Amino acid sequence: MKILFAGAGALGLRFAYMMHKAGHDIVAIDGWKDHVDAMKKNGLQAIIDGKDEGYLHFPVYHTSEVNQIKDNFELVFVATKAMGLKDMLKTIQPLMNPKTKIICVLNGLGHITTLKQFIAPENILIGTTVWSSGLGGPGVLKTGGSGKMDLKQVEEKNLDYTMQIVEELNKAGLNVNYSQNVYASIWNKAVVNCVLNTMCTLIDCNINEYGSYEHNYEISKAIIDEMALVAKAEDNVDMDKELVHKIVAGTFPIDKQGLHYPSLYQDMKNKRLTEIDYLNGAVARMGKAHNIPTPINAFIAHLIHSKENKNGNK
Image 1 (tube, helix red, strand yellow):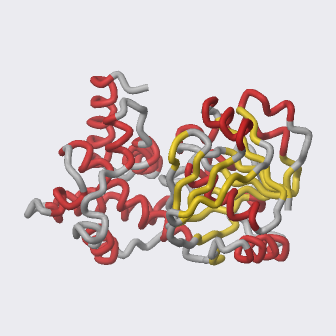
Image 2 (tube, rainbow, N blue to C red):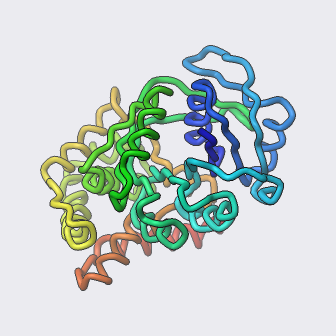
C-alpha cells in the first residue's frame, strides 16, 4: 500500500517503521523542521527494545513542502496532537482521493466531527491504541514493547476493502482488532485522561501521588458521572462506571503507571498548549449541546486554561 503518515512524531514513526519493514510504500510529513531535516539527511534511526536497527530511508517532507508530493495515498495515518488535526487535514487534502481511508487513534474526544469536515464517514477508521513510543532526539525513534489497536469504520460501507487494510496492518504486526465497541473504548480511555492528566497537572503530582489521596475516588467520581451522561447522549455509550473507576485505580501502583507524569502535565511544564479542549473541555462542549450540565468538567477546563495563560503556554 501507499501510506501517508501525517505527523511523524513518536507514535506515527513507530507505525511508519513497522509498515516500512513490512514492505509498504510510505511517506511522512511533519512540522518540526529539525526532525524532518535530520531524517532527510540521515534517514530515520530506529532503536527498538534497546537495539540499534540502523537507518530507514523513505521520503519525508515538512508540512510547508506538501505541494512537492505528487502521490495519492490509499491510507493515511493521522498522528498529530489533537489541536493540530484540523490544520493537518487541510494540508493533506490534495493528497487524498475519494477512496483514501484515514486512521485516527488520537487521544481525546470530538475528532469524528473534525474528520467529517474533510472525509466521507465511510473512509474514516476511528479507534484507540495502547501502542506507545518515544523519540531519542530529531530523527531518532526510540521505542520497545508491544501493543494493539482497536478500529471501527464510522459508516460501515464497503467493509471488504477495509478488512483487507486491517489484514495488511496485522501482517506488519500492529495487532489490529476491528471492533464494534470502539466508541466505548474511546470514552473509557478519555476517562483516564480526563481524570489523571488534569488532576496530576493541577495538583502537581504523579499518578501514584494522586492515588495516595484518600478521597481520590470522590474527585474521579465527580468527573466520571458527568462523562457517563454525555457519552450516552453523544455516542449512545452505556459507560460502565465501576469498570472505569477500576481502570483509573489500576494505574496508581508504582509497578504500573504510578511514577508517570501524564502528557498534559508535561505540556504544562514545558509551556506548551495542552489538549484540554479535547478532554474535559470536549465533555463540557458536548454536554452543552445536549443540555446536560457539566460544571465539574467545565471548571477543570477553565483551571487548565488559566494555568496555560499564567505560564504563557504556546
